[in-house]
Image 1 (cartoon, rainbow, N blue to C red):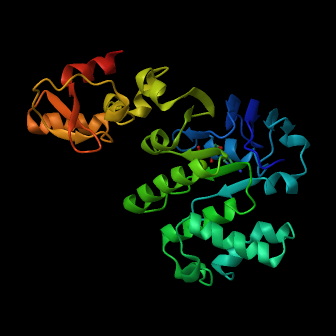
Image 2: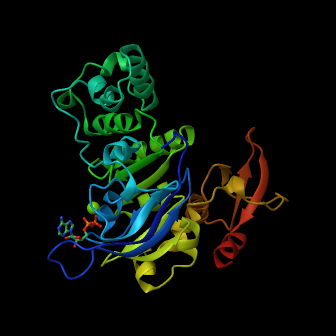
Image 3: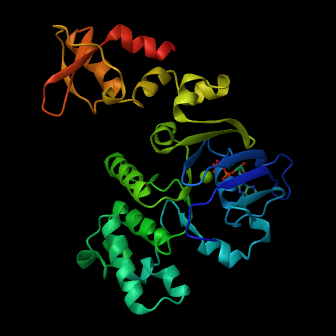
Length: 320
Ligand code: ADP
Ligand code: MG
């Protein structure tokens, strides 16, 4: 496997656990394009973890195949395969008797990198996950907060620059503020190091935020819908998906777009709350409602109104 991000194909993948009649994953077919973040989401027991762990063969595939690039995971040497896949789980599983630096260096050491190269890589990664190396290199897991541990786990998974990342509820055990920070940090990191990512969560809001595409699994491990967040919110495939994304899916959809991305109407003497272009449409709607205005003004970089958006124009977008 090369360092270039690779496409991942689930080709009619089924998993049956021994002694269980119903499959845990049932005929899953989907393609994750190279460099994209695919979020597997669905209720507990829906087969998300099972689907993910067949990619690095922590779980055997019963029927069908998974390919990374052109290579079937069934035909890959398991050690080689896993070295090309960064794996992050909820409670990072840091080795408690090793320092942060030693944890991050796990895979480079296995690959036989020399010490200078490993040291440089560890510092670079700690910097990437926003843990200053001077402060953190020599600490142990017990000397870190939950959020810091997840950052170290992320750095460790990225250490050998794998083309693929598997992340199973990586931020699930964190408090909401730390969680939000890490979600945005990961998106920033992903923008810098293009990886093909499969990200598991049971939280639809996290899926909408993180996913280029979202795969919704229903109980029994069957794919209910695979689409962009925008499409899933605008056109849920059926009742199950509509229920799962929630009755506020219109509002969620508004949070995907920022004022900057719209064609605005002229200001033309309109009066209303003045908002930065980076404001989401959801927050713009909230500003209209709380200020009793049917229009907002959108500011340019110099703080001058450059256009306006009316409530009517906003609701038309939702209908289209
Ligand atoms: P999720 O990650 O979506 O919560 P899982 O993939 O962990 O779901 O589990 C899917 C289904 O497979 C569940 O019904 C679970 O009980 C079952 N399952 C998971 N692991 C095993 C196992 N090792 N043996 C038997 N059944 C399992
Ligand atoms: Mg799971």
